[in-house]
Image (cartoon, rainbow, N blue to C red; front, side):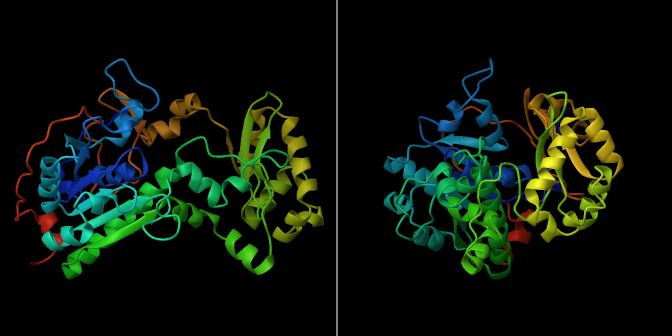
Length: 394
């Protein structure tokens, strides 16, 4: 595991000079701020006196009260404790926001306005400000005021209904997939808005919701229902348009995953398992039509061989296949080690950079830190080249 606390230098960071204020808790919105911080943005997190609940969520190490979850979500951020229930706290927050390029918040819609920090007044004071608002259902609509955790988005987006075994109930993902995807969507939208601010000098509001982010993943299932009346059943690890595809148990009890999502790959796979002469499986349509027969053959073929033999034989035929890893396997994998996919920062193992930029590489400069007291924002340095590029001419 690589020690990745080395910083490539602020002068190389793509977002050096961009100031981000985070007024958010738990995962989705803090994740958006984390991705910006990984590429050099100066992120200040405003925390209530009780601290972000993520500090107490999940597993803890022996080095203090903060969770591993927090060490990741809070990385590359400076934390400032501000009581937004007090007039002094609102004034402190406003001072930070006045000096910022980006504000990220995930209050329930309308709460920012109740605090006296309504977007219209913030933009009047700081016209180039980009305000990212992340919520469960969005800032408008009949459900806007509902509590909006990822679980509800996963249920109401159609995701849970298609997840699980055919004879089982709907399943929710066992990781924070919706929150993390929404964080990525929010970070992307912030960069779009910053580019617009650079060209025009005008900031704007960004409305990102958990449920609409997850709907993007539903892809062709939306037109398939609207135009064809197709409702996807639960297929376990299968896909309706790609067969074979899934997880399969080997003779040694280990599992492998494979996919034949291209005709050329399917052809190589069928030759390897002795089905290349079966006309039923020669096309996507044929494989879909004869799904059960093809999947049964694959299940039986793999079940008769060890995982090592299956991976070797199908890899030699240039088929897309891989073992189903536990986290222990992930940490031992030589490819992921070479790529520094998992890094260690301040003694904490965590995911590395989500993308590798050749000219402006990001870096994890530190893990999530303890809460810090309020301190005033420093004035911006107008001669910062990167900041001047983003903000544009006055």
